[in-house]
Length: 589
View: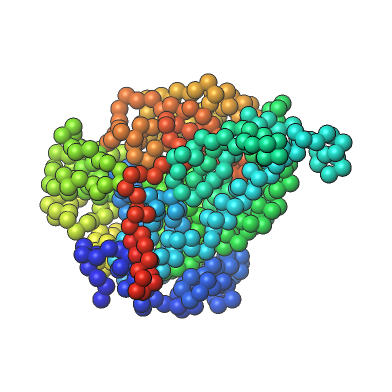
């Protein structure tokens, strides 16, 4: 019997569960994956050969496609990964063949405030430590490929400044006339480091490079990671990587990785990551892990490849998108589904009592300090805060409804939540015709998720009327305005002169017409201001910059003060992580 999650930390529960894990061969066989279709990384982790699997099962009937999203979260997250794993466990208890696709955790939040993405309590994926600390190296490969593009760029700038056209020609190089003041990319690292948001490189002697401003972003925000999320095969990976714009020439022409002759090497580094990873829940169901988090500054979706094979292997395939429905689900809906052609059958919207109270709290509420625990006031009964906070939930329900699929609200129950308040939420939803379930998967695993599983089975039978939010013949400026008004609830959109100039140039070129909008904004509010809770009224979305992800086919408006490099808080998780010198196991994750 596993330890009580209300008395023991997640990492200890995981270590206990890992004593009775299925071997990767047994797990694969039960999932319908053949032995020659797995690439083992030890006894309990594997990559799966997506092409072999898909070629074999592509004629299978399609399973039910379920996406997990959430309301606007508190800074601590509301348990989307936990719920994804919990509903898989619950459906398995009901005798369904089920699996899921989740995202690999970034070391940034792992070592900062939010922690790993392994789930929690009795709904986790295991082995937890390996999953959390580097796993099979996918993020490192993405990071190395991205940084190799910057290596190619900076060395080319140096050589073009030091050599004549004649010498460059002898070296087999064509002068690209790169403008060091117009570089699109920066470097990436898989940590949250505010000190690296703005840097100067190339200091020293003439041999050390050309002094220029640069930056670091977090690795999972890389365009290379977005490409991994959206591709269907290796051929597409290679083609898209070659289209990445690294910088611009002094005449304003794009300089791509293909121009820098680095695209092939980048693709070689990334190629092993195309195969999804396979691990298991605490209760032994299959879990694909592919692509990465951060839907606020990236696409934040598990991969199309993992979903494609999951839908052919399982009767129910559950996929995960990041943060609230305004960010993660909107990108799943209008970017991922457009690229994949797959249509979801339903969406689960995760909410918690604490988050609803957070969004309904008045000025008497204590201030939340990032890195500290959520103040106990959010766990005390408070129907006034709760009812006000329901506005945020209803807004996210309406977002999902606009896609034409049916939302199911899942109240992710914690041990300290009151039964009376949970019943209040259920009644509030049911009176408005909203499907709702309370799930105790965190404390009871699959047994605690049976109500949720039954509602998922019921809801997924309702015929979907899926449709996209905007047509691709709409100008990009108008697409941004549609998302801002319809999804976020903004009154209007203001564009900085830089952003407006870039968008006008984008709109004038046919080559960008089928590029999707992928807005970067705070996840802590429907607005672009993280301090505005609930459902803000009378506000304007401010777009200060626009990035072009030419390989991923994304136009990325940057809204408000959001940064592609998060900062580390004063009380980060790395202070709690260590090695147990008796067992040599990692503790504190």
